[in-house]
Image (cartoon, rainbow, N blue to C red; front, side, top):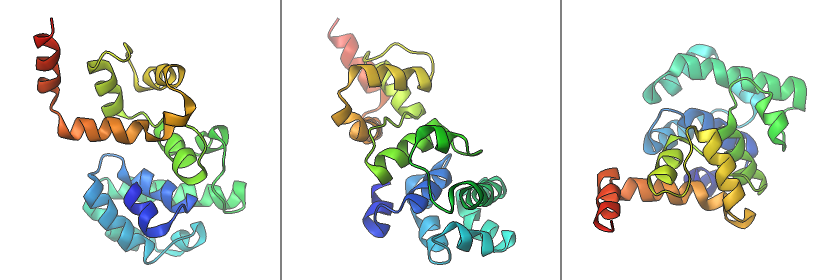
Length: 182
């Protein structure tokens, strides 16, 4: 997400769209597709003006391109219809849009609007449990527990720190470290 913000600023629509596109996709591939897409559309109106076949062609490299095309078109239409083309600034409003889940909502609130939120995906959930910081069964439970444990000033960076940790330390190494200390 930081690459999107570095390139396009804290544009809530572009952050929302890039987050939706990042689901089940690698960051580098998502960034490349976002650059291609944002060269053609940077507003909900511009995105809807793209023919679905053109949008599918742009999204093809990240996989699930047909579903993501439908989701982007639906989200854009909802933003225009219900929110005057603007990305809402509340969790409740964001979650009311089909295709926007807790992770996406938290990332948009935190990254676009500087509203404290913890973005918990499966990686954050898994690592927080592996490290013994939380003992939860679902990402939602992990989010709630991390919100309880962490001061709000750390919520924004929580996801990136856990993800960076997970990318650099293998789970078997974490388990090995913990087993050595027993």
